[in-house]
Structures are given as C-alpha cells and as structure tokens.
Amino acid sequence: MRLLVAEDDSRLLKTLTHLFEMNKYLVDGVDNGLDALDYAMTGEYDGMVLDIMMPGLDGINLLKQLRENGITTPALFLTAKTEVYQRVEGLDAGADDYLPKPFSVPELLARVRAMLRRKDNFTPDLITLGSLALNRSTYELSFGEKNMTLSGKEFQMLEMLMQRAGTLISTEQFMTHIWGWETSVDTSVVWVHISNIRKKLESLGSPSRIRFVRNAGYVLEGFE
Image (cartoon, rainbow, N blue to C red; front, side, top):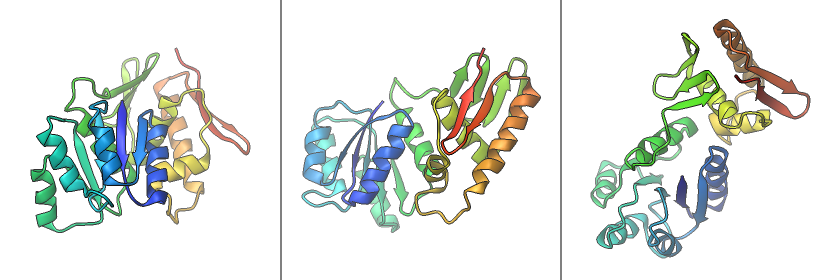
C-alpha cells in the first residue's frame, strides 16, 4: 500500500511518515499543496492523508482539482480545524474521512485502514503467523480452536509484533506508535501489556513467545 502524506508541519510530517512506514506502508511525504497535487496526479497512491491549511494550495482546493481530473484516490483530512462547516466542506470536496488534531495514533491508523478498504486491494482484517491469527475487526487472538479477546492496547502492541515478527521493537517505538510522541505515560506500561499478552499466548497453547532483549526491545518468535 502506498500513501501520500501532505503536512506543512515538518515535525508532524516526519512523525507521520515514520508511523506509516512502521505499519508497512510505502510513504511519500510533502510539505505543501502544490507538490501534493503533482504527486497525487500520478494516480499511483492507494490513499492520501492531507492537511487543510498548506502553503501554495490548501487541502480542500487540492482535492477538488484531483476529483475534477478524475483522480479517485481515497483521502482523509487531518487538520486542526474542527468546525462543522469545515468538515462538511472537506467531505463535499471529495474527502472520505476527517480527523481533527490532536489525534490518537490508533484511531488514525484505524481510519486509514477503513479508507483503504474502499479499494479492491485493501489491508486484510486478519494478521496470521502460522496458526496464530489476530482479527483486526474483533480484537480476537486465536490459535487452533481457541480464541481470546485482547484489550485495545494489547491488540495494538501484538499487531506491531506480528507485522514485524522476528524483528526487535523498542519500548520507545511502542510508546510513539500507541500513546503518541508527546505522551507523559510511564514506559513501564509497555512491560505490563507485554506480560498480559504473554499470558494469553500461553493460555491459547501457542508456541509464539515474546522475547525481551536487554537495552534493545521485544521480538515475537516461534511460529508454526
């Protein structure tokens, strides 16, 4: 899946690019509306995340031009503007969704997944590793005939681990992805949720294990 992200705040653009890349998307990031228009006109993207207030060309007029030229790529507006009339204006311009800042990282990812489902080639609802399956719609983890429901944070952490199975994920990466880059939550919360996920994997009889590597992070291992 390829995303175009247009955001004039350089720090937020860098964060969004990193966030989407962590979640296996290919990302092109631009910081103004004119560049966004040039990129989007290629029609090579599966989805777009657009700021409304951008130099050169604002997000609403950008999207209007794309729709007038037959570019149907799904689009989500990410903006600080929250007034109802501006949401309506964005949707009338051809946007598929609208998420005001500040935003929750899990909600942003969920909305992007929902947006991409409008295309034929969308992210599947199930993540599988051997006989272990994680259902994105129900937050259920299953192995064989057994299944167990995860909490929201457990789901988000295990989703990251399964998407990057065999790869180390640091505590800082979990914190940024799930709680946001400016969170004041203590990092010990990561260990608490990892502990709960380990117990659920064991209860299901799954051979998968989450190994802790000192000063590096966590890695999901053992699939069949």
